[in-house]
Image 1 (cartoon, rainbow, N blue to C red):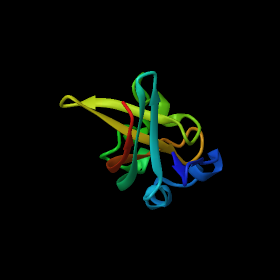
Image 2 (cartoon, rainbow, N blue to C red; image 1 turned 90 degrees about the horizontal axis):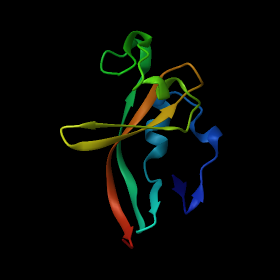
Image 3 (cartoon, rainbow, N blue to C red; image 1 turned 135 degrees about the horizontal axis):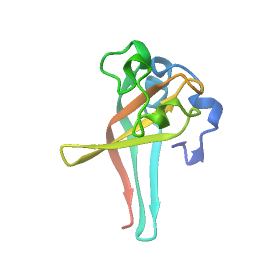
Image 4 (cartoon, rainbow, N blue to C red; image 1 turned 60 degrees about the vertical axis):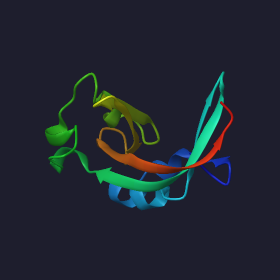
Length: 113
């Protein structure tokens, strides 16, 4: 993720999911592949606060192969498939504090695929 095409530092993500969620609004999300580049501005986010959040995959500090990434350092990406859609989350907070922000919507910016 970037602001004005400059990658964000890891320290940007080292805050609670509630603080990170609004900070991500307006950031440019870029996906580069061999086929080309696609990007969009983040326009909607949703915070998941981890152990105490019943809606979070990591509720009660539940650690599974799928959720282990939520316990990693901030700035990592956690993806999973639900009803044929791949959902994208950004890990927040500090290591072993399983918080994440769901990127709910982006506004398309550029595609060269």
